[in-house]
Length: 72
Image 1 (tube, rainbow, N blue to C red):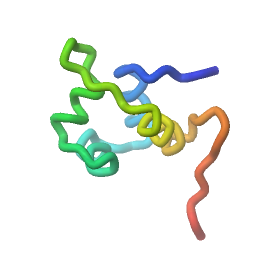
Image 2: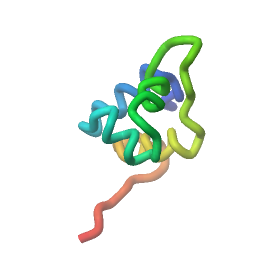
Image 3: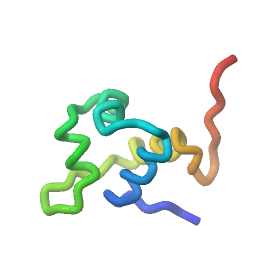
Image 4: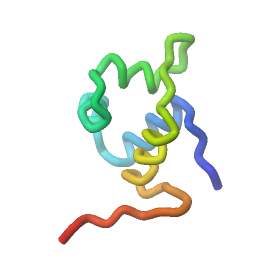
């Protein structure tokens, strides 16, 4: 099953990881208001790039092909 790059799924994935919007913004190099626009269902919304969405899927353990492993 493929997860689509939608504001709803971005928010669900972030919450699954246990991060705040501020923390996600820091990881992706954007400010809080920019991250909020990525989760917003408005005409003002900003989509995650394909690479950003793939990384979010990896962090949430939802990527269809790859799994991240923490270094020992």
